[in-house]
Image (cartoon, one colour):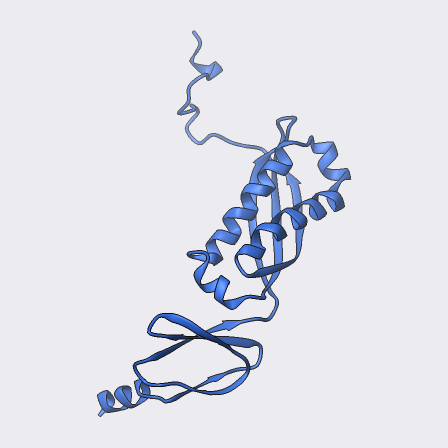
Length: 176
């Protein structure tokens, strides 16, 4: 009897787009409409609707990186964004969630490698504004509006080698 319920569920002729979301309706794989909140009719086997949250979302990650003066630091980054173009979000970038973190991580690394530890500590607001502006430009192509990029933690830390030698060579321990 469960198979009958599954068939009936698959044969629905409508979809409900909830508050805080938009739907992207495809007809035979081609985008035909962006649906707002409410009940929308669909033709079984012809239409497919993707539901996309348009509420603000926050993605957080931690990263270790060097500064220009060779200090190793750990930072926490928080990206606040919202989907403004669900079609672009779904179809302009593959695995968009992972790519947000990867893209912001790369830009953050470049920004910190250009500064010394003292500059990082004194220019936090400028760094956050620089990151937000840079990330915002790229994310528009992905259908996102970046509200802000914030640095949540900035701490110096030591780097320890587990087995006493570097895979790249050049260790002082090897000289005899």
